[in-house]
Image (cartoon, rainbow, N blue to C red; front, side, top):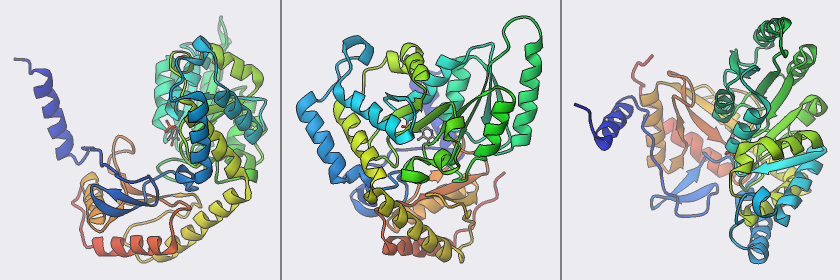
Length: 404
Ligand SMILES: *Cc1c(COP(=O)(O)O)cnc(C)c1O
């Protein structure tokens, strides 16, 4: 006999629990920063993507408050339906100036940005090549577009070139040559390593593909004026579609595409997650604009300096840990554990010691590659990093069970 909805779902949840894959929300009763109150206890937060500590920055809060007063709490409708409020226009001007592109378009989230953009650009005739570790928003956008999806080995231009050759050969028959889109991240969200941008740009030119780069973890930390990794590598002009989020280093929420005026006009007409969704509240757009200004200022420079000082300290102190910490100089430091159950258990032990770090497990990463994803932010202090490594050492007596 068929189980009813709750019976079926309870069985599925029990299976997740037994595999160490169950997820639950933990309430934070304070503002979201380096030191939080979580479920009634003080905790050090090493989980946040608020890399520059902007989420609680007075300049952002004041900008949000002013926009709230002047423009109200809600946006009323999609920007195409009821008119587009000034804070959204100012945000997009700031984004385009920051990224040095002709134009920009903001979305309600980075996830909505990837979905709407990829689906607007690509159809079932086309081919999308993505890095194996690309973010779920890129994977989901590629799937939803109906295009042929090909996955290349992580940061492997040779493997990508094989896909491009194959896609190119498909165009020789009748009909339109399939368009090819290469999509990847500049700093990988769960591994903290960099994509080989110059090689990717060379390949996209060689095969006439389009290149989409998600700078979710690069914007605000790298390059001149902290514009991102593409600017640091001098390849911004070769990236057709620059994507990012306003919710990480920039301290607010939302997502964006920066690129040519034509690209932005096209997405305004075709990106369904932009068209069929109420505009973000004006306070969110105003906070993001303030975050973009601050990231480019001397404050932004000083905050990034603090992140790298803490990075040096953590690398030095982590030398004596049993787990490996990769040496990529980004704000994301995945402590590789392996088994899902072991990672969950280690995260629990740290939580008991007042340290919050999420265990990242399948399906976010592949099975057996579970890790604690540590992030450093400018809101952390030296003693916080020392407390983290002390807690890791104290929690390290746990021997992970053997898993695949
Ligand atoms: C967080 C993230 C997104 C999604 O952005 P949101 O604004 O959080 O929806 C997209 N891509 C990458 C690589 C991310 O890390």
